[in-house]
Length: 287
Ligand code: PEP
Ligand code: MN
Image (cartoon, rainbow, N blue to C red; front, side):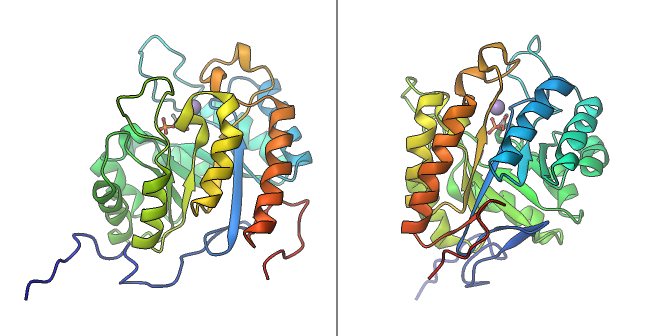
């Protein structure tokens, strides 16, 4: 009798049946929790990042995102403020006791990003950057691993396996849309795969409806769909002036849209018995 063995091990539900729950300064990702991460695509200046972080704090958001090392398709596009940007994000986040998610693109800059960020994001273009994955296996901080835009589930889970096998068990997977024949949306948010991955791995899996659609008006419906599909949270782009954003403005939410998103997602969380991870909502809504 042949046994159909999976090529990955440490990330699998067979290895660990119970959900991994990652605690980032009190915000829990995994299990019955539903985490909300939000912020600009890129850190642009002091005023932009502090306005956005202050607004998010008022909404109860305890984890903010913002890219300082940006992987842009064009070499002529804004590449990010690098360490200067991380300093600005850290100042704005610290003021509001928020934790930081920011992207790291190469091994050499891990120490700089890790100095400021609480979670290191690996972008879709680097999901198979194996030297980077191996190096992140050696750090003591959570890693947010985006799915490669043309990656199979197996390739994605094997990328996570690289990090776990290096010793770092704190990996959060992120479905951010894949390339399909359809180009009316920027990507196709693959919620079927998200639901499937939840059965294959104990690691938390969140959704990025911003990169996943490229269209701000699709972020709310796809956020609700992601929760229904079993997502452990959302990472969402927001901007104080999306029309002037230096990257991804067309998929960045306006502040009032973000408020609507939270109102609706809170109602869905109650329905799904999820503990939404917002500071304004400390009551335990799980039954
Ligand atoms: C981003 O989060 O802004 C980003 C560049 O993500 P991705 O790697 O999914 O394109
Ligand atoms: Mn972006």
